[in-house]
Amino acid sequence: MPDHFRTVGFTLERDELESLLQRAVDRGTLIEAPHGDYHVWTPGAGAELWVNLYRLGGQRKELAGVNPHFAGEARMSAIVEGLEPNAAFALEGEIYAWASPHGDEHGLYPFCASVPDYDASLATRETPFRTVLALAGFAHEFAWWPTRYAYDEYLRAEPSAFAATSVIPLGLFGNNTGRARSQAVITGTIVASETRINPATERAFQYVRVETYGGEIDILASPDVIAGDPPIGGVVRARCWLTARLVDDAA
Image (cartoon, rainbow, N blue to C red; front, side, top):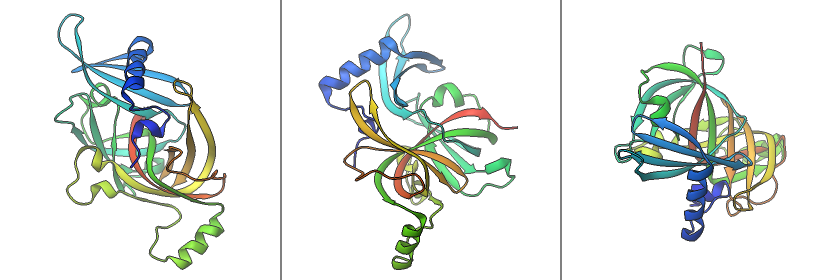
């Protein structure tokens, strides 16, 4: 399984990661939260690094965690029904939501997603509420077909495979908690696709924006997960870790 940092061109190599963390703290945007601060560094290509710091009084701070994120164009309307703060890391947490395009009263399907600014955006929220999410999937597995026809042919050979437009919330099956809950298999049509370079590391990653059941999701993949160049109009199926930010409150 690839690490989520490499999925958007960052690294977990110790010598490089320390430099990235320092640059994120020095150059990143400060977001204050009830339990600490976030330093959000966006070096380019949509890749983001979120450094979480506990405030210990005065100017002293302690590293509480670091997470990658991706700022893309995909949007999905949702009804957020549950909040799950991380018991071990107060600045992190997940949402439990239902996909709800066009503000439909009843959701299409449930899913869970990690939220990089959980403490800042959700610590005082009450559920349920409607919102629009910027939803990104960090691919653990990634397969693609050049056309819908090609995928339909695959379905005829593998009738137990997922429909060409579907979201399967794997993380909600069984006793998963935390990030393990924020997993799903996304299948949909590619509406944008390109190889991007993270300017902070000069490492490449694949970006595709996918139209799927209920809305759009940005899917990212490291080079060791994907082969070839998925074309616009093709079909992608990816097992992902989902991460989301609230970008607009729905009426």
